[in-house]
Image 1 (cartoon, helix red, strand yellow):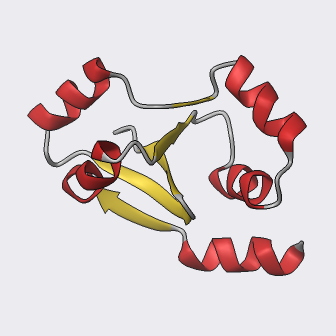
Image 2 (cartoon, rainbow, N blue to C red):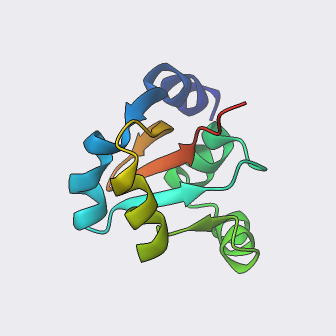
Image 3 (cartoon, rainbow, N blue to C red):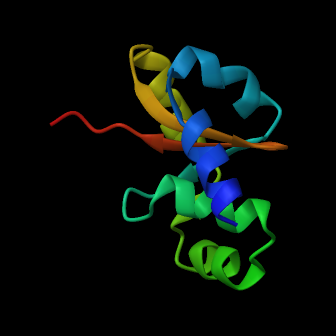
Length: 98
């Protein structure tokens, strides 16, 4: 498990909204709430930790982007996200300006 965590930490990256658009179009983006650690979510999904993932879905801590969110991001193409690829998904966490 620590190997998986280390691998995910290594591929953790920052992406512009533009880069995520094709993944949103193929329904592969999962938004991760800022309350959660992106790597923890990636580990849970990659290791099929169904109880954790179901709990996050139930609490709406991981969701698909809404049409409202996509519209907002389309009007602010400079929007950035922390991202993590866990095939076939792209986990994304919105970077909120301080």
